[in-house]
Amino acid sequence: MTDAYRLVPDVPSVDDYLRLRVVAGLSPKTREGASIGLPNSWFGVTVFFEGQAIGMGRVIGDGGTAFQIVDIAVEPAHQGKGLGKRIMTALMDKLAAEAPEGAYVSLIADGEAKHLYAKYGFEPVMPASIGMARRVTKA
Image (cartoon, rainbow, N blue to C red; front, side):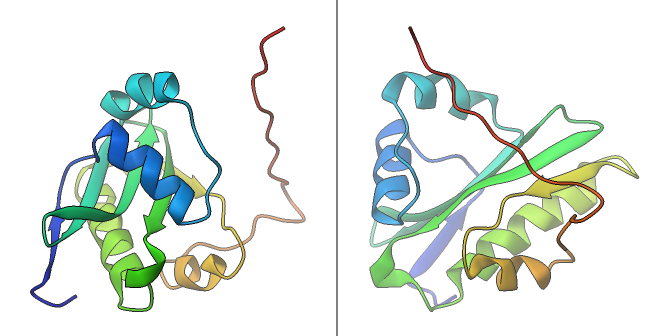
């Protein structure tokens, strides 16, 4: 990461979070959900370029037994510059320093991101386990 990029150990603002998810190709989230969820992050980082948030990543979880890496996103114009690696390194360093021995750390790898995550020791859980998901819908 060049000197032009600054990684700050903090979650992004709600506006930056909502924008970064969309421009990086992740599913959109609601302002209500982001306003509730972001303050409950276990740890997060935001990458800035010329004062604007252009990347982010978070760890969520119970702080003891289970953690999940989420919201790894970098604006397309800044991809391919090692920023995803820098975000992951910061998250993994925090987990190594503060998560208890034996804590379970999971993530969902979209597309080619699986190659980045494999560099940090993540591997597929199939066939022993299968990831499952569901979205909350209001009637």
